[in-house]
Length: 344
Image (tube, rainbow, N blue to C red; front, top):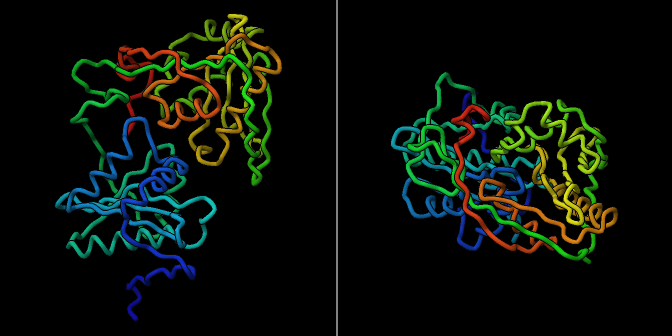
């Protein structure tokens, strides 16, 4: 056998790589969300539809019986092949499924006489570079540039015609303590939730920037240190930090300054901790603290179409009810310099 010939990775017994079917869509979208591949500016359902309705793209899934364990989307632009949405369910990793999906996509491309394949890796997902290097991929010396051609109810992109950011805010509330049982505490990690009493501005900025980086959180970014300290070090503002194996993984902020109401002002996870079952645990904990310690007349929260697509359904699942919606339009914070010019 030639040294340079790649061996087809063997799959565990009972596992299969096959083409995507319409019945797979719900499980596929759940997989992408759990693996942190869903962004506010790309609708994954639209991506599935586009791949299913054109001749230059295909989706492959890794399955074990009825269970969907992994996926890859592959396409070509007439010159190069591209890989997207490579994902393997966390409990199915280290079985060779990731490499098997990549090789299946490469085989599809060579069958369409495409000589080269490449992919994009976002800055908040650089850990995957080790995997791609292991299966034969390497960086190139190209600079990626982009421009949106369609309007979306998601972040307005740098270079948009009017430089405005348009989104819809949903305001929610609950007026009585929910009776649902607590979600399970993730068992594979040591998890702790601690209040940061009068957090330093530097520590708070670290939390806010890391959690909000994918969702264009800008309101606190534009504040100077003194103004920010007045808020986060107020006795009536409580910042609870979620730690996983001793590392900050996310936070929830309760604002009790407008008694008898309490607001869940901010809530979220850092990108590398999304998809591990920590979100429901953190949200339930914040709700429980609000009701057990403050007995509010109302517990409120709001979310918008820039946030994670599952934010609104998650709030509703835990007992929040929408009370109104409002269209907003602001100067894009990336155009004004409050946030960096990034996003893919």
